[in-house]
Image (cartoon, rainbow, N blue to C red; front, side):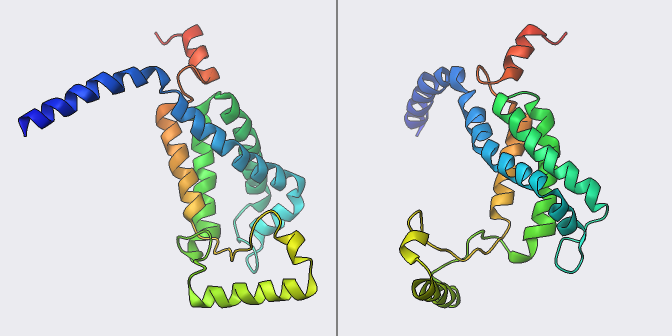
Amino acid sequence: MNAIAQWYYTIHRAIFPRLQHLDGLAPLALRLYLVPVFWMAGTQKIKGIDNTIEWFGNPEWGLGLPAPELLAYLAAYTEAIGALLLLLGLATRWISIPLMVTMLVAIFAVHWGQGWAAIADSSSQEVAVRLGAAKDILREHGNYAWLTEKGGFVVLNNGIEFGVTYLVMLFTLLFTGGGRYTSVDFYLSRLFPAR
């Protein structure tokens, strides 16, 4: 057993310390993944800000949030500006905090009641029947080939899966920052070192 442990740590020390110089790639990958998510969410809210305010405030068919106008603007601009900052790797740790707050609000106010899965399990008999009925209607009354040209239809469950995934990614960025060699934050820290 001791020889196996020795062998393991010898290989470990030979490989992984060399990866240290590439450790900025992981935060870069997280940032680049999140950029279009937040850019699209934020800009769509901004373009339809009146509808966003109404959805945020309406207790019957919306979210029923307090101060819907303030929260709609905060969410929209946090997401849009946050996407730009993540793209640059500028103030990565700082912008992660309000973006995590928007994710928590989305998780609990929008998605919580639908459970975990973002997309319903199409192997479920109940979901399969509904999906089949929708496809039959589209085949009969729509241009099904055109509609499915870019991908198949699914039943959206709208659960917390994606929101939690984005929250975990942002939480990671809060601790790692923008990444060595791959962010404006890294070069600013070199230009203005901490004292």
